[in-house]
Length: 572
Length: 47
Image (tube, rainbow over all chains, first blue to last red; front, side):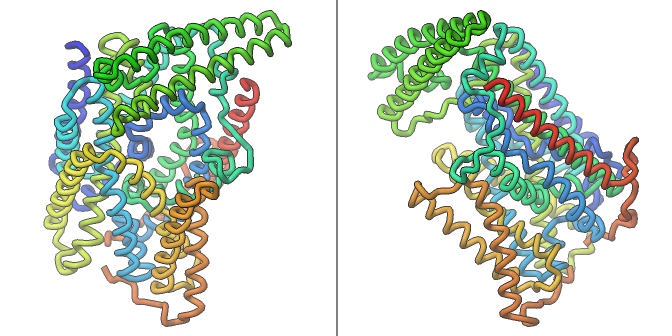
């Protein structure tokens, strides 16, 4: 990065943060602080929902995922449009009608205080820990490739988002997310255009022939992680949980001048989410083609880690792999060119033979990449061997012109800040409304005190996230663990909401016990799958199973307890 | 709890070409089906 890149990066990030802080510096009304301005339009809400959901991992890791495994991941989003329609029809009108600040207030109103506290606690537990990961994940990658200090990157990013989120609350989050999304879109489109200009003719056909463009898989196999069926069914429940019951999303759309604004904001996402994700995975597939023809393609994309070992005591083994890969890479390139020529000739037999030769070359190349990872692991058991996260950032730093590099690094930080701001805003709100006000009911009518407390809670969660991110840097396997925890705890929470909306005769105690039982079932399924891998099911399937179990258990417990299961609604 | 929203009736979507919210949802659903169909064709064409 040169001076121009730094100017673009710092100008963009600090400019947006300063603008958000200044525009919302007088936000001292509780409703505005927690829900945003009453005149917030549907486009701002729609962009805010999109920005909260898409973190840096989306823009940094997804192209790498497509580079490695093709476009199949896009099926993960197939349930999203259907889920958003259900949220618009069922969830949003009820939240607006009751005028709640948080989704869990509704649970208190419908059932009782303990169910509300259960919902709020499940949210705070998983989102609080994820807030640390939201900072940590991009910081580890950016600090590795740019040579920055990891702790300072985490602290700078964390403090920047705390400042404007605490100052302006939801209003500042909405405002800054709109501009951050503009930076993200502008940067990603620029990178895509530059990439297209560097591709050979027939790039799409090459990617397709090498298995990178398989976007839809109708195979009815429970063990496959991403299929059309797991995407539509599992993805529907996962998206319903996220958009309907996770306060970091609910808070984005319950504000606005009218119900219409929230609905249109969600429908905006229902229409554009899959095309947007298609664009990102397509970028990854095209990066794959680009690197088939790039002479300096590394065998392992985290070059900082790789070079460290090349220069280390076992450097000879790593250099030998580098040399082998250079030979294989050249061979693979010639096989691809031969296939393109055969395809142009129109000779079916020649084309088929060339395609087989190309597939064999790719297999050999993949095997050597795996050997590189195994060698790394054998030399350093703590080494990060997943290098797909580094594919796109390597392209950015080595192929884009100065200025655009700064813009793309700004994209990564903008996405980290925007999703983090949504999370902190929701954590502060839930802590104030569902916990603090519950235990201090007399203070509920003191608006200034409520805003003050919301600011304190937001800041505390921000500092907790920074501290957690700094801790994670010494225990990296927690990242994977926390992602799994998030997908495990959603189903019981959504189950409680489904019972609340559709089973009017079920009372608080029945649903409370049912949620605990469903949670136990999901945990049991998950751990049994780990103990017996041959029977493990794709994690998306845990969502419909957990929700279904919670609903069935609620009905059963209600039948057993009868009227004793009916409890008093939470008065606050 | 915040005062309930007074404008919570099932208002018109206010989008040209759509008279009711049902029309909007139907459009989004049809669009989704179309996108999945195009992706399936895309996958098959480039297989």
